[in-house]
Image 1 (tube, rainbow, N blue to C red):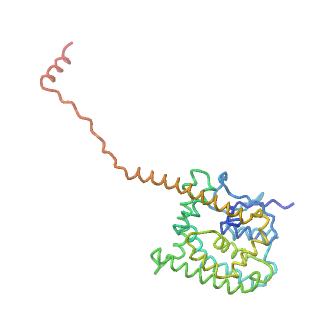
Image 2 (cartoon, rainbow, N blue to C red):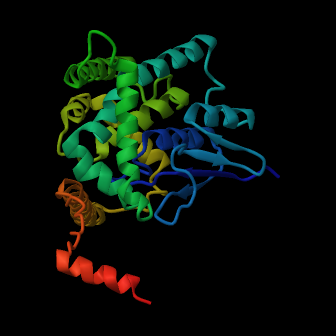
Image 3 (cartoon, rainbow, N blue to C red):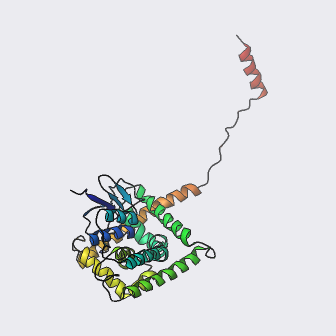
Amino acid sequence: MAAPLELSCWGGGWGLPSVHSESLVVMAYAKFSGAPLKVNVIDNTWRGSRGDVPVLATEDNIVSQPAKILNFLRKQKYNADYELSAKQGADTLAYIALLEEKLLPAVLHTFWVESDNYFTVTKPWFASRIPFPLSLILPGRMSKGALNRILLTRGEPPLYHLREVEAQIYRDAKECLNLLSNRLGTSQFFFGDTPCTLDAYVFGFLAPLYKVRFPKVQLQEHLKQLSNLCRFCDDILNSYFRLSLGGISPAGQEMVDANLQKLTQLVNKESNLIEKMDDNLRQSPQLPHRKLPTLKLTPAEEESNSLQRLSP
């Protein structure tokens, strides 16, 4: 009997099984390859590390990072690419490299760096799934990590300033989306009628960008103009994740979104209050140490005090 495969990942919303791109890549590949994963959704009772999510655990192994998890599944005979030719395999690697270089920085920026999106959507959503008091700290660390990752890969000369980096990463992302749209064309998947690794990566990167309701939608608007990529995401959701989503109706989804909006307001109020209190404490004037006054005796009192010390 095969060892059980347990995937710990961030959960879903907005009709998605996960709003986290890397978690979604692994979940999609498992569906395509038939890997029998038991999915453990991270919530505020989770006590493990969140830095390496998604994490695949078996009786003998713990594997993190999508590429390593997919390689592990292939070694367990769960291979979504067995029908690909050598050229298609090489094209898969090239397109995944393109996604990580050109599209991923813009996805990270949309979720974690764009201020309105972060404070209205991303921070409240993740904070609601992290136990207090980490819920007040960890989203900020994740945001800084995303920014550092963007600057590390794209903040080279002549793009010294964040605004210049932002403009460039969104131009690159739109070009990448156009290339993906042209490559997909009218096909159901990128290499014919059967989904493979490339389809899992494209779906994982695009579906959250397509479905999550952001106030700032620069890249989302461009994606929605590419109807074949939107259809691609919808088809995978309907074909592979419909049952796992619990059959949420449009009215039910509206209720979920309304509850998330209330949660967003509550988390933001609490976070703003704590940050304001912290700022007030740091900015409050610090009173200097006061030196206690020294009582000075009059000459008569000094003489009387001396006489008392000398008397037996």
